[in-house]
Image (cartoon, rainbow, N blue to C red):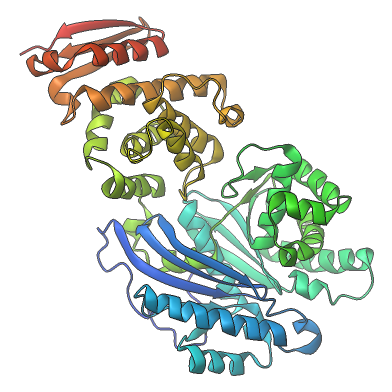
Length: 520
């Protein structure tokens, strides 16, 4: 266990740029990230991810996973699983070729518990280098905990609490807060390890509890949030959604209350796992580990007593990117950065989103900062799905906002953003297949999203160049008066369609519209 936030030593020739061997963010003012490939060689899976897009909020250009089971049986034999080793080598050979096809060089490969603990880990490392040209950077448990925690911070800048990353052979804990990683520890609580504990459920429970009691004393939880990282946790969260009938199956920033989660663990324990696997699209290899992961999570909740359990889709791979980010880049809002890159690459008129936000800002002057950032993101994204068929454009907008890889955005925020973008293209939301998701918002939030959407619907077509050149808005909330002062140029633009959309906006505001001439 360590308190420091500096990187720990690792094998594989790490230098000041870690496993990348080169700087990724030479220009702190850069908005976009050049394509970067990362492979995570874990105890259970081997995954290749290629990042692209916004520097502060990288998107997944390519993502492929093979469930190799490299660490299965390691606790008993001390060696990598022979079949898992063959499968992992084949996957790495393929990933090396894919990287060359995408002109990604060098490919960064990080290996965790299985390779670092196996007696034949170094030999496997040499074989991978010899046969694929990939140099595996083998990290210790402390470094694994730190990188996983940094991955959470990449997608969740304000995260404060304890990150818990479960793999096949180990489970890491790290305290985070204020954008920093503090105390951290590693433990042998991966499902593959637990398979080797003699006895039944009671014996495993005592074994798990004993280890967690020690981790409790090291990490010193104080009713924190726990951020779950790892495939087994994500399956449990997906099953929690299934039990609750939760309408949005996006795992990142999915939040669970301790009592409800314990109810789900009970439900999983009495259910047909085969049926659940089919219902949730979970692989057989992953579902086989879920019962043991449930036992760990139950004891974690009992001993650490968290106030909330949240799911992070980001971990070691994203943590490697965060490692190199200068503070100026880390300080940016990942949601706004992702929206800016989306506008720059997909909108008809990049740069218009900022003008639209400025034009509409009088409507949202009294809104709290969290709502204003959603307004800004919506304006940046308002035209990024214009290529979709007009009959489906509104729903495509909604789907993009609610299911896209966007950091710094909770589930109600996703639905609010999606609903606002739906109304940017469509007046009515009734009868939509998306209606079940609206229940994640209050009635007031639904109304506010409609206002934002209809405001964008008016402003985006009022003037194609810059709506501020055509007029300006004023909002008197107490009198419920929406004013539009038209410039001489704007008088010609305020035709029948613009008038109809302005009227729709005033109706959504439950206001009266007043049209005047702008002072010259």
